[in-house]
Picture 1 (cartoon, rainbow, N blue to C red):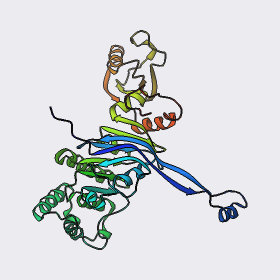
Picture 2: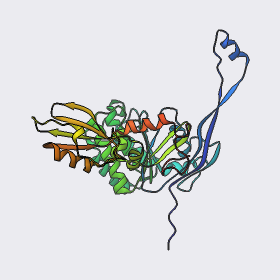
Picture 3: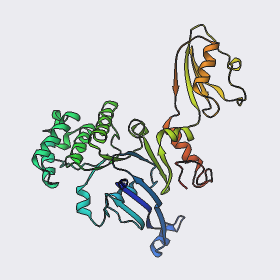
Picture 4: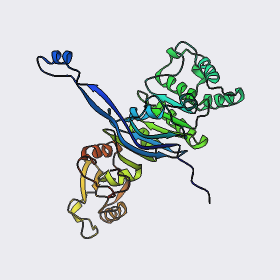
Length: 357
């Protein structure tokens, strides 16, 4: 019997605290700032623990100031933790910096790793030497990425002349030329149009599925998460609020589902007359909106199944089309923040899988 492989990322009771100088308010606040050296402690990351297995594609979510960027900087070796333990592919990132960086790929939405005044192809050629990639492997990877990312129309163009979408595609190619087993993506689709976002998402899915590249994705665009990630971690005030599947997140915190029903033009519906299972609460099914023959019905997922509701509707009125919609992921995440699961005592440790206390 073989032991399970170690996770590619292991974070144990990780903390990063900063000392920030206090600024005083009021009419003479500036004078107190000049004459005192008072500081306060900011806990950017506070007792954080999680594992990421090789080959996973994980969404790492949180509002501005939640601790996402600080976590990534520790994972990449840019920051040294205040306390706790952190291993990436068995390495201590800040102690084995050169070897560590050689095994990573990283793309940050607002910054480029390419040379600003050089054509894209020359930047990619220079990176072959930086990472010491064998020429045959570099040519093979470059050929794949040229096709997958459609680089040819701008591969001879200086980076400074690229559109944001073109530059992002070039940065993705640059990050993966040396076959890193782990890829960090920070806002990879920020500011892009729908077509550019779709191309980049397809590429991320490809390198994860076909090359087995582990991906940790931080983003404010929750449609990225919906289209790419099975697992999500949610952080706020440096603490992990949730770690589990996207499906479970919706089930536990998504609230009510919606059934969109297109009735025949002359049909009318009385919700009180539906033959629903006995014992339902009065608000188990509610009208969420109506536009002519299209009805939006909100229903409680814990009390009523979609199939039972559809059966009751079909017995009452002629239905032309229908669709079940899951709760919006953005609203689901917002609900978790608002409930303050770690601060308000809404969920105790062990009450629900995935909730971290």
